[in-house]
Length: 285
Image (cartoon, rainbow, N blue to C red; front, side, top):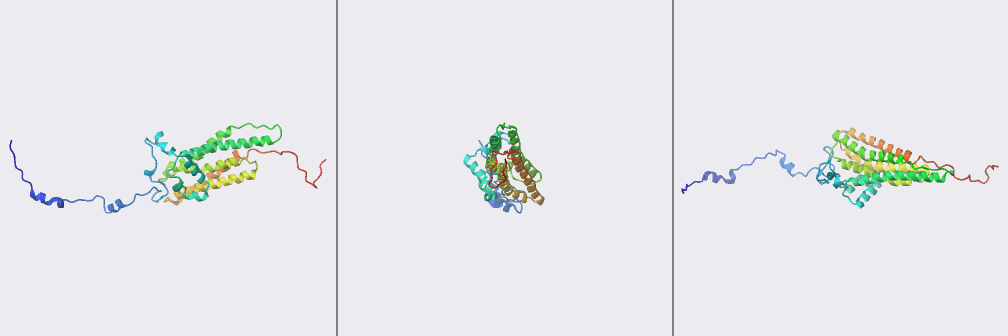
């Protein structure tokens, strides 16, 4: 076997690392951008720190049309759901509700709230109507109107689920940007919790009391929605986007009046018992 001696090119070896040159392709601002903190989720160019970043939001293992994708949004304990429900009735907590109580957003709470509201509307109105029939003239009967249940299902789910999805789609189409559909449904769903105690208290057969209760429910839930939605509209580049809050207020007023007319005012108690004689009044034979 033969060996061949190979002489190293000393001229090249002597250059060593100093002969190497590195070129940056990041541009003039590359160094600054590399050291900059990641931008939080926001609307357009606005920085909205009260919304969680996309990497902090729970994600399932499958595609968005599969059940596994939405499973993490239902993984929440009852204590947290109840706290989120109670805080919707606190006007002082409304402006900071998303960063303080709704991180991360969930879908179980809104679904539970809307379903409870459906049965509360039907049972409360039916109970009030049956009590009114019992206290009315003898022989008055009351039959449960199960059409009210179908009306409640359609009305509550349409307003609590379909409206926030359509609102989110409209904002995305208009370029108002990174508010997730889960946050929209969560905010809208939890906002309806106040109607559960209102519907129970509206069993009281006093018209003025029912109007006051409906007004309180409209005010609390309306303020909660405005406090959480208006910052999104105000952060948009187009100032006309703020007019959406007027549309939301009109829809919310419509749902409040519908609750009052359909579920809280259709029963009327007739005169119960005889007239009370007032001393000094006109005597009747």
